[in-house]
Image 1 (cartoon, rainbow, N blue to C red):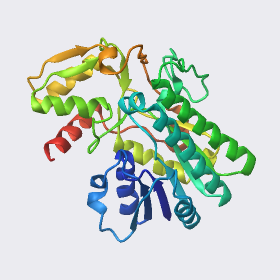
Image 2 (cartoon, rainbow, N blue to C red):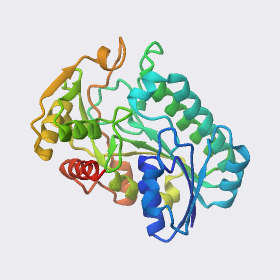
Image 3 (tube, one colour):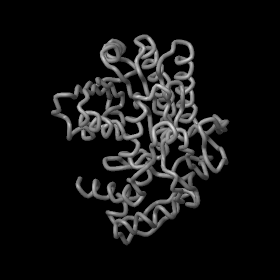
Length: 321
């Protein structure tokens, strides 16, 4: 098979590229390196099955069309990611996520290509449900708070996929990622585990934003990549949405203690108000846990790696830099 991965030099994209090449497939990657890095593809940079194109899906229409026409499957991962980036540059977030996805979907519909589009648990917004299910109603915050621009832009991406599927039959699937973590992930854009682990290894205080009682589930990138590969061949998944994540819930304060334990650090824990970390009026979700029954029923997928393994892999990756 020939795969196209937009954003393939990103954290998830790099791991997915490696897995597909290891399975004998050809992979073309398009990335503008805005948040991705050639380092994420360093281990396969000389692989004969890899074609790497530095370009922006917002303004490379001919290149993008040629790539989609030539491939069998598209993984659309290119996006503005990370809470810090979203708060700092909401215009870029909306433009990249909405118009970039529109460019990709027009062409996958034109050539009837299989496409899997990455979305996010952020679309659940302020939901207070104990488990977030793909069929839930969604409660997004006010447009006066820029952090919700990311959720809204990715939600519009989902509506685009569903619209193209219904109107053209385009075989598209949406996946909602819940805090994917693992080696080579950077804490530069607000990702909490690499940020915590990096500070713990340096002996610096682990900065917990808010009061630390907010809880999340973290899923190893290898488990996420396996889920993506399982979904590709399942035609029943076309026109559907799937949560991909772990169901081990942990508060951010508890996570900080666990990181200190797994790194053998003597770092302290420092609580930082949201308005100091991000912006005045910043709103956060108190709890996020995915209902993964749908993808499990279809493919048998469930996470295999523990949170401790996630932290250990991030620790070893950062030590090796």
